[in-house]
Image 1 (cartoon, rainbow, N blue to C red):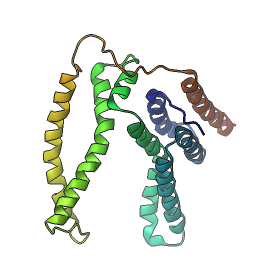
Image 2: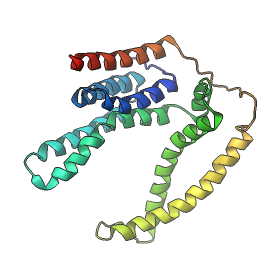
Image 3: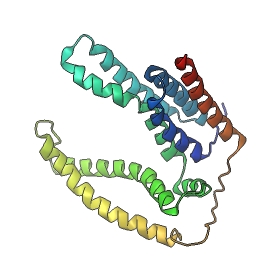
Image 4: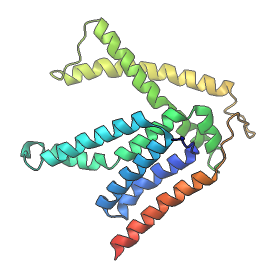
Amino acid sequence: MPKIQLNPIVLIVINILAPSMYIFLNGSFLKIYLIAFATILLLAMGCYKIFLVTALVYGIMDGIIFLSRFVTAIEAFALFLVVLQQSVPCFGLVAALMKRYSSAELLSSLETMRIPRTLVVAVTITLKYLPTFTREFKYIHESMRLRGIPFTLRRPVKSFQYFIVPQLFRCAALSEEVTAAGLVKGIDAPMKRSSYYEQKFRFIDGLILALFVAGLIGGFLWYKK
């Protein structure tokens, strides 16, 4: 099955529209619609691992929510999961966005939209820093293991402190590195930047967005009756 290559703007627009639609649409319809749409999109893009992780997390949450009907002790936690579960499809699409596209591709796509340069840079850095943040946590956990410092739930505050303090220092160092790399690449240049990655809005991009919006409108009209 050939993998489709979407413009990153499509995934960004879907993640902006989807959460805000809970104000206007029936919650149960939108939850099912989003997970179905995200599933089709992830499989079409070839993001099979992300799809499996997303489906697994969604299934575990569903299981806990179902179990809360019989176990009153986890009702409060299940209620929190009901709210969080609505965002799982969006998290899957964001993961695909971070994995499939480089910083240069994201910049090239966002610069085709008439939005401030500072916002373009902020969005790009945020999306690309999340994997770095996760990788840094793995390094810190490995350092703790080598020093014989366990991460235990018996002392969650102390254990969390061992994680967060080194991470804050790494954040400061990484922010300087990211700023230097951006300046070298001319991110602050006043003229329009050229890019090796020319991201055009193609027919398939418009079709995906049109189908997504059509589904939202259809759900709104159906439950409006």
